[in-house]
Length: 431
Image: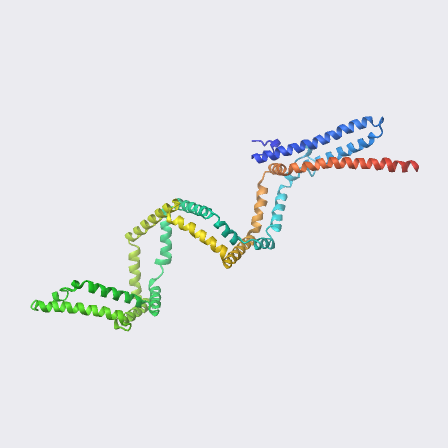
């Protein structure tokens, strides 16, 4: 579809407003040039009868010359004047690529230079501004809404099977495939070395004592049933009560005595197990076999899949509901973070320095690529379209050049004619 040059590619209402202003200023410049032409014709025709009209003729003649010269200059920027392919005209179209390269280079050197970026960033406290913004009513909720929408979009787009496969691959690579024996051995050794088994033994002994005291019937005939039938029943009950009493005494002793033999034996057992896990190949192989048997079980994999589906469903429901606990906590967390940013100058400084370093690094590394965006964008433009875009943006202001040229030319013509008539002519006559 051929482009209508009269509209200069105007599309939006703002474009058409600029086009109207351009046409109006072109009309003013043309009318002024026409007035100069009419004055010139009249003064030229009557200057023999009225010699003083020579000054008017000279002024109008200079105005026409200035107006035509500047019309040619302005027109030559965007097209060939009168359609004649005069050298060095239609400059914007013919020099489009050079203009784009120049703009890109100008932006790179004058806007993205290291010292300019650093100076700009140094005068801005982004952390404080962010804190103030988060404290304004509704901003934390709006940010939460945006984050929730992004999260919902991600959860909606993601395929459950792909996510499950990704999680399974990550778990297998970082959890299942590495040998557990040496790792568990080092962890258990550190656990025992720090005495962390003692609280567990305390808890187990306390619970065992409470259970034994509360459930004496559990020992009823526990031992006596294994005694010969000829042993009297009173003896059987005595044995049961005795075993129960000893069990309670044992649990209480373990709980109260920090040096109880059971505690020592438990610590020694755990230490030996930690050493064996790190050194004995047979034990390591048994552990690896058990590990793969558990994780490769279809039931475990099905449980993991159902867990992800349930978690995803719950997360979607919470992100969709503005009154959900998750959304409320997100808003509260953002508001609290904003208060901390305003109150903690150290935190502000750390964040500002981090942001400044990150931005400066990115600008320093990619500023040529950023400038190339301008260069490549201009180079991709159609030459005529580029010329029209630029004319539409600045054409109105350029018409003032034509108006000024007409006025200045008129004054210059009057001045030259005046000097020639009142100074040079008398001197020449006297000579």
